[in-house]
Image 1 (cartoon, one colour):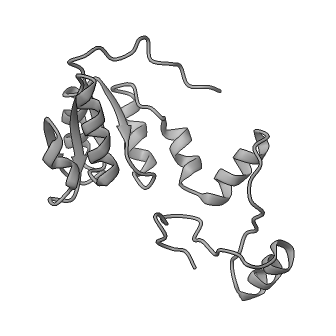
Image 2: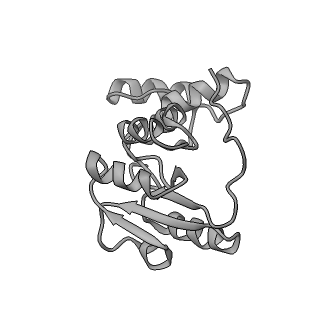
Amino acid sequence: MTEPMLDAMLPPGSTIGILGGGQLGRMLAQAAASLGLACHIYAPEADSPAFAVSAARTMAPFDDEEALRAFAAAVDAVTYEFENVPAATLRLLEGLKPVRPGARALEAAQDRLAEKALARSLGARTAAFAAVKDAESLAAAIAAVGLPAVLKTSRMGYDGKGQA
């Protein structure tokens, strides 16, 4: 099942809600401003870099339904700047505003094994990979994939975090 496209592009003056306030959110907000779009950043951390360049901000946990509903009421569409936003947050927001990419895409991106399997099922070529759960499966993965290799967590890793 594919997600429906937005009915139209967001016109200048629209507000994009961005979940996450890191460096990518900051860059997204700056780019949006150059196109005449405002950004409302939603992040749990008070020191979020994107807050400095956004038109509005909400500082609340990603599971705060009241804050999420108020955030949705203040924006025209929602996106996110990193893949570790809870999928449940997106599912709630999808019932209120257009969210792109949607929760299904986020769920695939949150698990590296599922993401690679999806990419391959769609015909994309990927680097060789294998699931590793313990020392025995690590040895089998090295035998199958070869060295050098990168060992990554399947969930919650980013920018080198969870990699060896």
